Image (cartoon, rainbow, N blue to C red):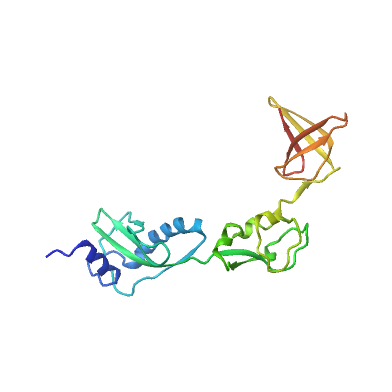
Length: 225
């Protein structure tokens, strides 16, 4: 009598399959990890593969596909299904998914106007997953940014607390580049406000005329016509 596919899946997941041969459980980890990385990274959660201890031998497969089994949970202790239609097999790989989220917290008191460095923040587990919608979770998003106001040590770092560093300051002389039909004209003017790279800022030219353009990385202002 033929064993049903569902019974076979349970049997293989328990690590008791013994068939013809190509790498065992270890050979399935790469497609499982690739699938979970794509699925879970946007959620900001972590996972752990739980490789069964028993032996698993399967016919070779050049392109195994991983996915959630129909109706399966996508958190806690669950499974990822790995299929190989060409070789006629599918198995379930046990995984543990941790829904706890991480966020950036300050490691010292930061004064208003200070630029954050890598040592000023660290990742910590969020006490409430709902905070994950507000708190930054990668250091790159905070390093090099300026604190809008003072931050105490241990503060959760939210996006609105930070601003891009100023590239132009009010009353500072700036070079203005006007671009039109492939032609470029440059002249010096005076910035009328503080601005970061990518911001628009008004500039007073020597003639008294005010123009408005985008701040560049070198501190100049570009006008486009």
